[in-house]
Length: 385
Length: 237
Image 1 (cartoon, chains in turn red, blue):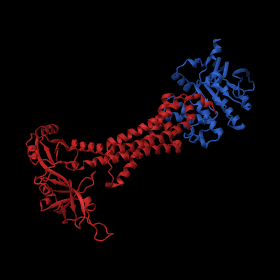
Image 2 (tube, chains in turn blue, red; image 1 turned 60 degrees about the vertical axis):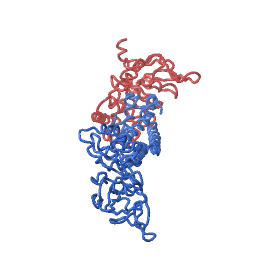
Image 3 (cartoon, rainbow over the protein chains, first blue to last red; image 1 turned 90 degrees about the vertical axis):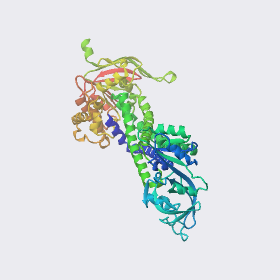
Image 4 (cartoon, rainbow over the protein chains, first blue to last red; image 1 turned 180 degrees about the vertical axis):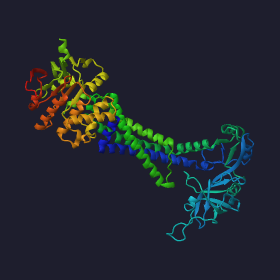
């Protein structure tokens, strides 16, 4: 009877296509919007993702997310180093500065100062030059994606394309000389300022302050120590806020969600996809059932039980759902990949499972109305011509 | 008396059926007494609205009477549970509908196999048995054809094959020739007598078509919800 149900469904080509298209649309919209949301949220903590060598991030207790770095006293670094379970702790700096480019253009850049000695906290991938080149005088390393974007030089003549920043170019960061000694690739960020890496000691000179600025401390936990226990110990002994990379990523994501309402906006788009998909697929599936009512009545008269009829409808709905889901996810993936880095798009197993669950729910709603109709169907109607 | 009961396929005693209630109530059957014998082809005839279709619906177990008793091969349908009645229909009763009701996306063989699939026979075996029955009704070469590729007469022959494939004891037919021209109708009725009738099987046919009365063993005339006359047909072919 399962085979019969599927042939019945595929036999009515127009409605079959309508049902599958409705489900494809729902699947595409739900998967694509959820994928973009997931991609955007991943970008909010891209610096944490890129700094994979550290187990813990130690910040001022008032810090709520990775861009909200509050200055700490540099002696905090030594207090953290003194906590049991800490293998190493290195300083980190993050700040936003006016950066004058060759040609006079000014852009605001996010400057990250990494440990002078170990160079821990640097970019995940060098495209040109070496990380060690940062030890040269006034050296900085620039995000390659922005070298031809926000950090590109003004064109010499109006109408020309902006010239990308190149090795050896001299910048002014907060009126201090900076020389480009390399280009790196960083994970795309939710925030829009170009990223510039330099040494922690050099970053200090960009700040108009007598003190050496400390934004965060990166910590590696000794082998055999539990990360959560070391976090607790740092919190207790220093009064600072220590979080694992995962916790800091999550608190950043939560902060952005709370502050921007972005989840509600994407949630509404996803809900819309669900509702419109359910309406199209549900209505078409119900019409398909109505059109086939006399055949269902005939089957019922010939001895098909309620269970058999329900199974047939369920199989029809799920078969259409499976196809629609596959097409929708496929289309969303193609869409996401074609857009490249410009579009924050990230598919994960939980997202695909959630999207699948949503499509199954739509199928259940659509099948539910049809099942109700078929269950109430009087087989005697089969004799009405 | 015992021997007589053994020969009875369907027995209706004071069967009544009313649709709706109150002032809009319509009484379709007003105390029907009728018996259908094994091995006979009985036709129910009468004007539109006289209760013929309601009566075969009760006999086929797809409609419950309000009062009276209807037994089919000794089984009282009204007192069966829903599941038992559904099973009974699937195994004991074959249907031929006026509009054929062949599933348009299934081939002739697959359509004929439907009662077997309902009874849990595996698809491959069901289609093989269906193809055999199609050969018996002269459509052995059209097993893969879709209903839309068949003429009206061929579609009705497929419907007859479907009613026979699971070897039911009672076959009920609703206006089986009304959609067919005279010649095709005659051929369908000849086929019905030839392949559907058997010693242990009964056929009940509801019809308006006087041209096929000659194929009946007995004709029950109905009017206003009653059987007014049951007549033996000595000319039965």
